[in-house]
Image (cartoon, rainbow, N blue to C red; front, side, top):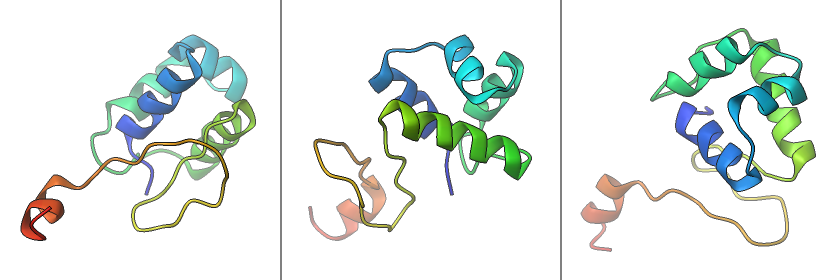
Length: 90
C-alpha cells in the first residue's frame, strides 16, 4: 500500500515538484495531485501507480510498503507508526 504522504515525501527527497513527477512518470499533474491527496492507500488505476513508483525508483528513492524490509542500500527514512510504537513502550 503506497500512500499520498509517501509520494510527497519521495518528491521532497528528490527536490522535485508535482509537475516534474508528472513529467517523469508520463502522467498529468492533476493525477499526481489526486494521488498525493490520498491520506491512506492511493486509489488510482494500477498502471498509473506503477508509473509513479517506477519514476520515483529511477530517480533514486525506494518506496517501502508497510511491514516490508528495505531491499536497497544507502541512507533512508521510514515513518514510525506512532500508535504501535506507543503501545510497545518505545
